[in-house]
Length: 330
Length: 272
Image (tube, rainbow over all chains, first blue to last red; front, side, top):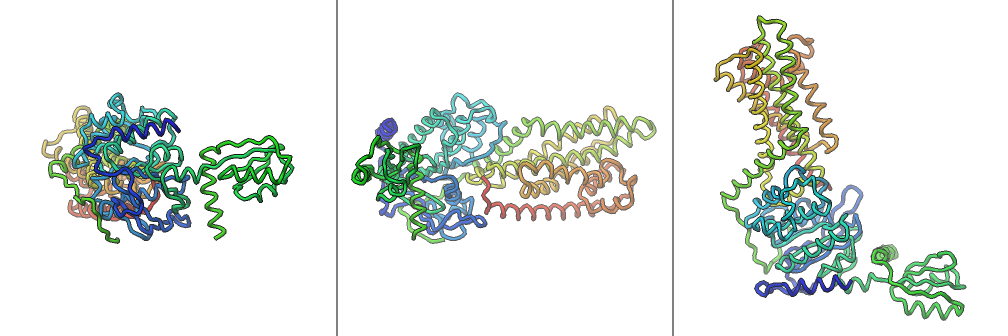
């Protein structure tokens, strides 16, 4: 995580003083928002995509929508862009109904696209999309920001996965928009390509842009965002700074051998889940210390004690599953 | 829509007329470039009609030198109609179904592009391809088939058939909004080939059973072909051109209505 943090600091320090008029993160209580959604509901047939969703995007922030596949992230982005309509509720972007489209000149979008016209060259795609906007970036600048300079003469169909994502990123930024929607920008990318995309996204924030990023990687949201909303089954289940979300999501894993039964271990307060692995137990917990204290008290034979950080994805699963269990109890 | 006050400047971005025109031109330019670079589209829309014309209009007409030129002229009108249909149906129907189903349309809709630029660009590409096909057919007919007609007649024939791409573009649009990306080519072929046959584009209508001759009057390619045949003076039963124009117009409006329905239906879907 250290590289991520240092990268973030450098993004801040690059920020030119001329455009530092906006605070990096605005407290959620502050009523300044350039996009907002209220009580959004949407279902596709029997599947509920969004359930009473509220959202505010503050100027200059990078807001991450974190959630598993099918959580409703893309649906929400589509509504903010005005290409889909909610069943009920309201959306406004720059004070207007996005559906009417008059503010699209201030928006940029990187969507998950199955297929892009493959015979057009990178330069041609960017040239075309730039022409849609009232004040586009010069082509060369778009190429530089999105890392397309060296592939500008190649047809889209001949590019690698990472290069294709960069073209879509270029399409999103070429109109010099104030608000950008990046829907799963790094999905399917290898580590190197993902790091490159991250540094490109950070450079947008350095330019004073506002970004809504969707992702299902906790470490991506952690590395980039000022604020994270965790979306699960169409509802926001957690909101906070990356540190706050991590504190809620990052559990510990305890491994030990014990004379206790599986059921007895499960009864210990603070244990999220437990499974038997050969002759040892593997416990997922939020905080290790109280659980270890309890384990030692209940079983003086306890041995082979190991405490490790839970994997990010497991922790994230714990967060969403925990919520699902809670909501069932209620 | 709830109204809320925003301390953010709410300037609606304005585009100059010049920039708006530039969008339409660029969209058209790149649509055309894209189509010319897709070998399967360029080959199937240009080479197939040309090949069929050589076969049916010139090689088969060779047996009867007396009316060789007449056969070549007749087939020029009907194969021209056949060629123009393919350009419009595949250019609109298949490409729209793909771009819609695979999320590309969504990128366009999320951008400030006026949606009409997208459709006009496709129409422009259809008109350019249709013109190229008609000029090639005409050139082959004159060079090898004994076709001869006044320049004005030739211009009128090309003009009518190229204008004929409009109703079929509308039909392609409707298909593009209802067909799935993978099945769109099959759907277009299922409509295109039987409709061409039943309208007498392959075999002159008077050689077909009476039932089919009646059916043909309900099919748009029949009306376009009759307009083309009228122009070169080869319509078997010359009927007033206006009736055919009306039929094509009605067909265009019905197709556009279906497409508009599909467009609205599309907005609520999860595509992309």
